[in-house]
Amino acid sequence: MRAAKRVLIALCCTLAVAANAKTVKMQVNGMVCAFCAQGIEKRLRAMPPTQDVFVSLKDKVVAVALKDGQDIPDDTLVTQMKEAGYDVTSVQRVDDSLADIRKAIKGK
Amino acid sequence: MAATLRGCVWTLALAASVQAFAKPIAFQDGWTTMAEYGTNTMRQAQVFYAPKYWWSGGLSLTEIIADDRSFEHDISSVQLNYLVKRWNLPEAQGNVFAWGGLGSTRGHDGEGQFTGLATVQAGVQVDYETRRIYASGKQEWFHSSRFTNGISTVQLGVAPYEHDYDEIATWFLVQLRHYQGGVLPGTTEVIPMLRLFKGNFWIEAGADHKGRAQLMVMMNF
Image 1 (cartoon, rainbow over the protein chains, first blue to last red):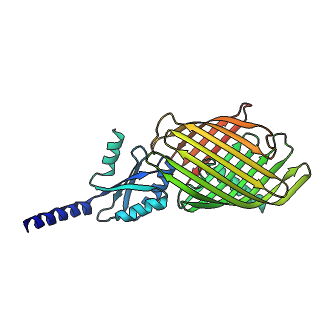
Image 2: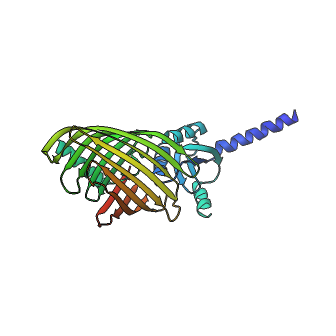
Image 3: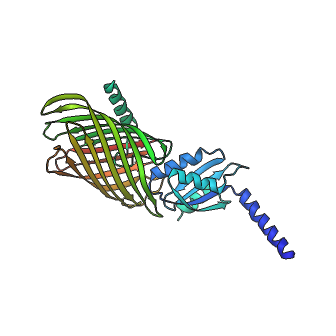
């Protein structure tokens, strides 16, 4: 019973973090040039919950900052990327801002 | 009417310009404009719109001029482009494109002047690129009751550094081009080129061994 309670609390905490995550970070295959990035950026920026978009060809990362209180489901993002012509290999919800992600990638 | 249309396409392509030997489809809901000046023998301007990432359609103008000026074909056509296959790899992308079009040709040849000649065109392109190497092969055909022209082009390139989205991409390329149909009989052009692109703008420039310019510009938006 106690174990079940712990699992429930852990699950709630995980969901809360995911719900509050302000950035979605995706690893994407096939992005090799600016035109790829341009199409992806244009498509994601057109989504109403999108605050900002960062694309790194070097790290194969597409990061989407979300507006306060808004979200885009993972499945929707994967579909959007597929319809843009690219394949998502992983989706991660993070608390880092786009500036943090940019800084981490550029600082490598 | 045809002259007006031709003027509009050239103006659009040159004003916004270019990705001619890049890809005929940039991205969904995107416009691609490109213009190419191929030494003294080929000029092309194209404007395409892509409703989906796997197909686009638009207008294409191609001038093919024999090296000895014995003929000139100005081909105006409506063209559809289709992404047959794409490979998205962790560090690379490969594509197979095919296209076809219907249009009209005016010009002259050994039999005299002509205009309004129904023409069909078709093409295929295969490309593979990472952020350090680029290879592509393209074959185009233009056919009418009066002529058949073909243009085979291969580009091989290397980048001196791996660019990112916010940086200028620099490429050193060699372009090999062979014409079928008597444009440059028995000759394959070999043209070293420099390609630069950043954001939505792309430019390539080079010259053949006679110093004749090869230039291509492209813009997506």
